[in-house]
Image (cartoon, rainbow, N blue to C red):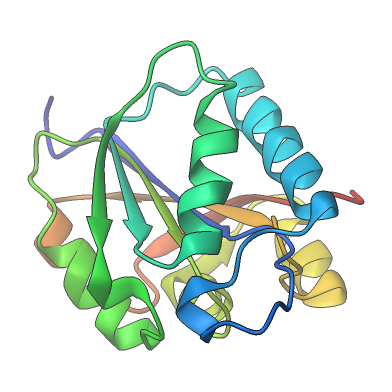
Length: 172
């Protein structure tokens, strides 16, 4: 793969979590979250994109979201459970993505708000179609994802260097 070929980043917010009496990191998905995670997985699988790498927060709700979503994929990408995604700022998420090996073309990041939405906002210097308008109108509800593209090595990813190519939320 050449670094001149467009890369794809999917920023995927965990699905709807329940509120049992456990720490925030240990919160599981609610029933609606389980349904929405699978729906998001089907939508991503239907895109036909073969993902090379998934970076997933270690929080219970993100791991459960990923497990249900990836079950819909024809091929499971390599998955790395990364503690740094939990409560990460957009800048911290960019630093993490900058570490991605250049042989990975298509990457999923399964994380949390406000970091995921903030990252989608600041990476996307341009937008295709009505993706930005839909994301601005809807915000970034549970199980939503944004698809961004950019060209170059992962270490060159910085604010404004990507294009917001698509946006999806469970009620879209």
